[in-house]
Image (cartoon, rainbow, N blue to C red; front, side):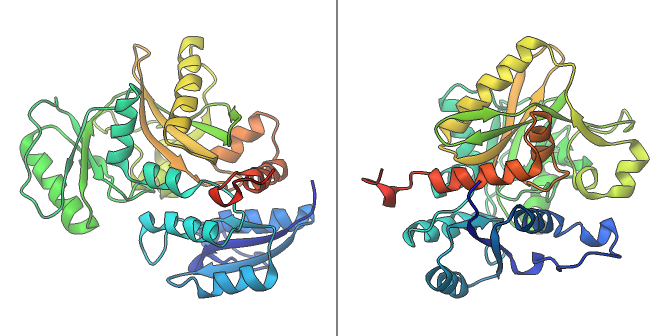
Length: 344
C-alpha cells in the first residue's frame, strides 16, 4: 500500500509511551489499542504523528494546516468528557476537507443515540428488543406493555458504563431503583428494554458502499452462576480477575446454524446501510434458543486493538492486523464526503 502521512488523533490521556518494555498488561490496558495502531502503522512504513485531544480543536486545526496529513486516523471516543461529541470532531474534519478513518458524522449521530437508533431499526423492520426511554429529571412511568425481566442501561454511554447484574430487573420496584441509579449516578437518560436471554454475538463490517461482513464472534460467559443474568457488565468486560474466575472469554462462534448465520449477515448489512455507517462498525446481537435474532446495538468505530473482537474476526477472514489498518485507511481516503462532490 502507498505510504502516507497519518495523523493519529486520540484522547489526551491515551497517548501511549514509545517504549512499553517492562510494563504489565494491566498497566497497558487503557491505551493498548492506541499503541497497537501507532506501532503497526509505523512498522508498515507510514509517516505517523500522534495528537492528543481533550477539549480544544486548536492544535488539531494547526496540525492539519501545517503538516497536511493524507489521512487523520480517528481514535477519539469522546470530546470534553462526552461520548456524543465525537461526531462533531468528524464534522470538523469534513469542514476542513480532511480525509479521516472510520464513520461519518451522521452515522456516528444515529448509532450513538441508542433510542434514535432503535426507532430507525424498528422503522426498517429490523428486530430489536422492545424499549422505552425514561428521561432524566422526569417522574418514572414504568412501561405497561413490556414484560419482565427488563434491562436498564444508559441511553448514551458505552463500554458498559452503568451496567451490572442489577441492571436486569424483575419488578416495578427494582426498575425504579435502577432507573434512579442511571439518572443520578451515570447522569443520563435511561433506556429500558426487553431482556433477551440467549447467546451474545458480534458481527464486524468493513466498507463504504461495498461491504465485507467478518466472521461472527461470541461472548462466552463460562461458568457464571445460574442466578446471574448473562449480560456484558463492566466486570465481564474489564475485570480480568472476574473473567478468570468464571472462564469468561471471547471466541469465534463456530457452531451457529446456517440459517442464523445468514440472518446475521443480512441484518448486519441492512443495519449498516439504514444508519448510514461508513469505514467499519460492529453489530451486537442476541440469539434466542429458538433461533430468533435481535440486534442490541450498532457500534460505529469499535475497538480495533489487535486482540479485540474486530481485529480477531478480520484475522479469521485472513485479514491480518497490518492489512486491516491499511484497509481502514483506504476506506477513509476513498470515502465520498460532501466536500468531495464533483470530484472523481
